[in-house]
Amino acid sequence: MTDTQTTIPLLSTTSIPQVGFGVFLVDPEDTQRVVEDALEVGYRHIDTATGYHNEKEVGAALTASGIPRDEIFVTTKLRNDHHKASDVEGAFERSLEALGLDSLDLYLIHWPMPQNDRYVDTWKTFETFAADGRAKAIGVSNFLVPHLERLLAETEVVPAVNQVELHPIFQQRELREFQAQHGIVTEAWGPLGQGKYDLFGLAPIQAAAAAHEVTPAQVVLRWHLQTGNVVIPKSNRKERMAENLDVFSFALDADEMAAIDALDENRRVGGDPAEVN
Image 1 (cartoon, rainbow, N blue to C red):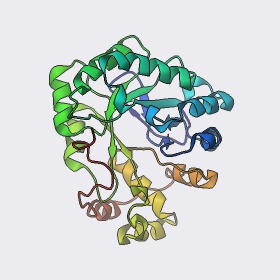
Image 2: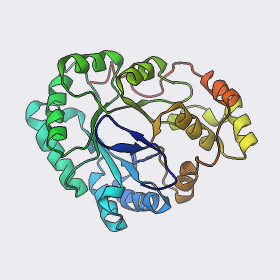
Image 3: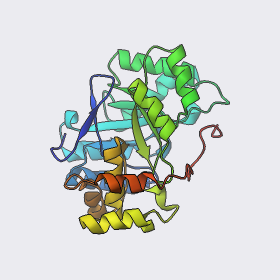
Image 4: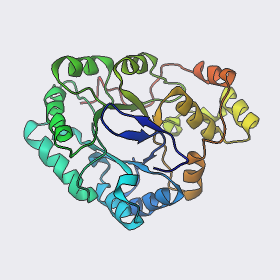
């Protein structure tokens, strides 16, 4: 991994770079170029999903980069319509093939889809991927506390990661506390609010940006890091990729952190996991 990054140990034998690069809504025709740019500026953690329809292009970028496999942390996710027991194994193998990899660093259940009530059985199949080494770590995405409680009660392996919507107006404090108690790392998708509200115009963020002579986006990403979250910002622009990664040369003080913490409205801007099915 790069010297400019911090990593967080997972419950398995691996560690995850705290800043990754996400490819949600990156068009397949742009993905290889975008991921190659991200790797060139220093990212060593790439997050994709079968449902993003760009795993093959991510794999092409990994190959083209020439970077040794063990230096890049790769995450992908099971698509929602592949939860049937007969589909999970095949979906996993298809992801490996598309990415051109023999194993994954992290494989996630993308959504719990509680009305389908299949995520426990799906997780039991995930446990076999971890047991045979095809996935160095397994985890979930968009799981609420009740979903995690069921996994802890009915299965053997604790999820290494839960990747969830998390940004200054939706801080998921109860969920983060529960996860910390069980060693589950919190990973934030949409860490910059996905442009769905004026995050960068909020006074505490503007003030911190001015004080440290950095951008509001860098302030928010730094807040995530100091909170303990893994983050996966995205951009199609190389200069913005580099900017989002350049968050290790300054630190927010306690007052700045508290001011951003106080922005929490417990307000989602994405889908509610209790309703996505």
